[in-house]
Amino acid sequence: MKHILNAILIAGSTMLGLGQQPFFLSIEQPEMDFITDAYQVGNRFYFIQIRSSNLMPPYEFDSYSDLLVANEDGTLIEKIRLDTGQAIYHRFLKTENNDLYLIGHLKAPDCKSQIVVTKFNTIENNIEHLSITDACVQEIQKIKIIPGLSNSIFLEVYDAKEGGPTKNIYLLKKDYSLTLAKDKVDFTNSFSVDFSRKGYLISADRLKRFYDADFNFRKQKWFYEDVNSYNESSIPFSKNLILLGTVQPRSDKTNYGFQFMLLDSLLKIKKKTIILPAHSTKADLLIPWYGGTELKTENEIWTGGWFFRGVQIDSGFFFIAKLDSNLNIICQTFYGYNSRYRTYGLRPLDSGGAIIFGSKWRPGYHTDEWLDVFALRVGENCETMITSDQESNDPVFPIISAYPNPGINDLTFSIQGFDPQVLRVELFDESGRVLFSTQDLTNSLQVPDLPPGQYFYRILDREKLLGVGAWIKQ
Image 1 (cartoon, rainbow, N blue to C red):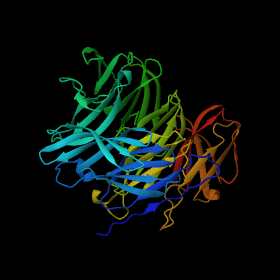
Image 2 (image 1 turned 135 degrees about the vertical axis):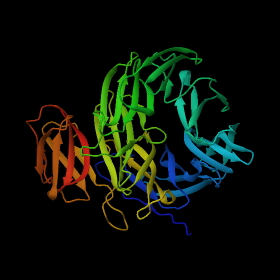
Image 3 (image 1 turned 180 degrees about the horizontal axis):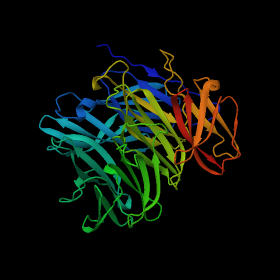
Image 4 (image 1 turned 120 degrees about the horizontal axis):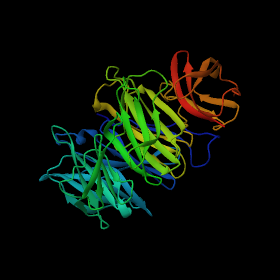
């Protein structure tokens, strides 16, 4: 089959600062299925692109990874084959000077999996393996990077065994070699530095277990919040708090949605925020494959996730949001609806905004064989510059921004790709109660009667939801 390489990009805005130009990169190429990580080095963006069929057994297919290189406006300028044998790279570890450090795994005839740490030089495009560790009894499905005590780094390695995945924790040494963290410790769900910053916290569903720095068991406590902890993430936050990101996927529960909580050492919830579309949905909720919550600073938390409906194959969407240190939603935007999206991760950017990435089903195809990669870069207020598909000229994502944000009495919506005269906006509070509604968004709205606080808005074209977001009135 003829390979197709088609990068779709619509970008540019006079309202955005330098280095914050949003873009949407979509690459149609049958043998490549999704992006696992993204990293910005100077004015270049690097994406790891791999083949999804090799993350699930049986491991019978050739496997390899590419580096996609794009410039600041999202134009694809180079595709580099990481020709290191049968290799799948999962994550960027770090960057130093002109070198990118990658974590992945190799397949060999006599070994199902070998964990590899690789250095890639972006100037000469050469590859050097820094360490190779046999994990021959594992069929590696995913590798996550977990920060430890005293700047140590752990690798959370998932095994795609029949009957349910298992995982092992490896300590990454300074010479890039690996050693198992400790035998007979059940690293069941999430694993992170604990509240005291002197040991580790390991979740086994609602049971939180505490260990010292050498993984000797200390104590355990029950966390009674009704959530699904299988895909949760725990991040040390502020002084003696943990930022817990998790999901309640059941729509019949009162706390249905993507949840973010600040917990103290007694497992009491100090703050809590739930992200969910403002319209009725019974979609399944999933956290990105490699984790969906990242801190740029403690006052700039980026998160994302995806929704899909099993019956409506072509219906799927995802979101990206920014929270502050009190878990106030600074901005949130939902994208998609035109295909089935899967998000694999996100990364805040030093130059401003964040980037979320993964795969999407190609229109007209209903199997994983036809997954295309995508990466969406947003600005500081979750704004994008995607208006239409170049071939069909149909809207892909409406561009909706509310400003000034925060504001006082007036609120202006900038909407590209749609006629603002036929649109309706509804402002509502955290309980979902509509406090303000009006038709025609051509001019600024005056809302002097609303008291100061955080509000949410939804933009509708007749009864079709185009997008939602958050607005703070001072």
